[in-house]
Amino acid sequence: MAKVKQRGGDSGSPTFGSGTKREENREDREKDRGDDEGDREGDREGDRRAGNDERGAVSTVAGSLCEAAAKVLDEKLFTPSFFREIWERSPLLLRQEDLGDTPFSGRRLVSEEDMICMCYRGAIAETLKVFQEGKLYNPPQIPFPDAEPADTSATSSSPSASSPPSSSPRSPSCPSSPSSSSVSAELRSREGKKVTPSASLLRAVCRYLDGFSLVVNQADRTLGVLQSICHHLAKKYFTHVFAVSYLTPPNTHAVKTHTDDQDVILIQLWGSKSWKIWTPPQVLPLTEEMLGKQGPFPGDPGEPLLDFVLKEGDILYIPRGFPHAALTTEEPSLHVTLTVPTAEYAYVTCVQRFVKSLIIDHKLPAESERRCRSALLLRSARSGAEDAELRACVDSCAAQLAAGLSYDSLARCLEEHLNTVNALQIREFSRLQSFPVVPAFTASSVVRLAPGLTCCCEEGSTEAIFFKGTQSLTMKIYASASRLIHALAGRQAQKICKLPCADPFERFCVLLVLHSKDLIEVLSR
Image (cartoon, rainbow, N blue to C red; front, side, top):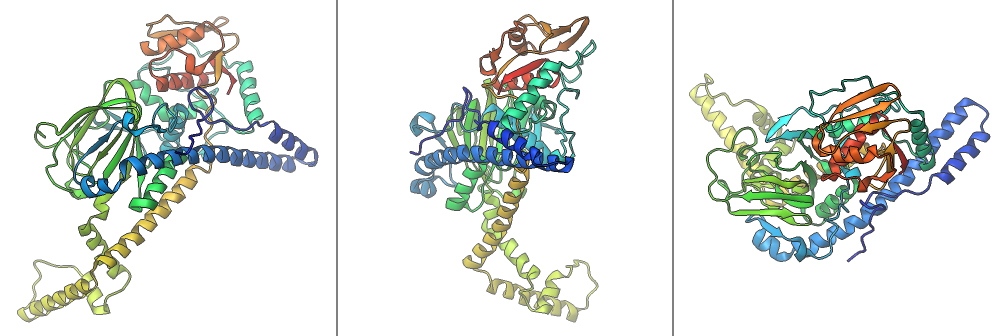
């Protein structure tokens, strides 16, 4: 098996090369330019080089992770017996202990920072969905970064740490800390890349703190390693594959019992989830036959075919049409589905697509095409002779269509369709990767309370009070965030991954809240 290159830091966050050399190069270029325009061009060139260096480092990590993931999927799941006995027939559960060494546990495939970036890019692409107990809520609206202010993390308003939507600070906000701003500027300069404002990232993920599930459709377009895995599976098996990520807090669910028109391979990356799968009421349903998506699942699905807990590192295959429901346990859950849109591959769908392509591509005689494009009027006032002529013409068109219908013609038409879909997939991935998303900190960063601030927050409390001189800020919080803030109140510099919080993603989100209000400073990234 290819060696998996783990990402630096305790949580598996990406490591980037030192920005010192890039900064020296930028200064040298500035000396050679005597006008402001030259200075600005030098800065832009430095940003481009920094972005290329960052993408190169991430690509190396994504490549090694993809190689390891592909090896597991090829050798353990997609075997000849799988396609002969399991595919489109029955679910299959593969336990982590039977898979050997995989990148699907320990947050190696997707870290907290990765998930923050995925949600942010998903919000920009309008593919981020927000669910709670089966109900869909309005997602955050985030413009493409070119339209955003340069850096508003210190001044933008944001939700309070782990606070209910209705809560708000009851006291004046603490003024920004000059030391915190200078440290942030130093970090940006040292690493040679612009930090994404914490307030902007928080807009994408803040609903998680209120118990909402975050679902990123087309997640492969937001993260390189998922794009690489989907590309591998598409090239080797399915022609087109996309990914969806489901991040769900403890003791809840995103969607209710339903069926899909797709075959999915679920990989449990964080935590665990309780699953039930039932016998399908309709074998291999088409898109129009999905159940439980637009309303409640009709009737009682009966006794489950499978009832189990999916644990970190496990893989689950569910064919289309099998009703299923999932509920998180006492811990949060992140799973990714590698999705094959098999209803699009169904022969009947391919026949529809083929017939329409003959018309659009003008492959029929002109009169036959005109007749196929004309409206079928059920109550037309036609004479007997006209009706007989029309029926004969339609029968002739049907014969011409049938003459071109074959396995090869259907396969060619499907391949052309999927090539178009794949091209769109690649373009959108490139668009979303055209701007770097760089959180101000990672799980391995060292942080502390901002200089000049003190904080009062007891463990189990539902509020935290920050003081600076005679000013104070009272912040409503959930009790689950109190231990983390209490630890920061001790004013000792601490590694983020060591701060006490049962949910590592909640910890990251709470710190985004605090950083967006300049209540903490990042000492190392």
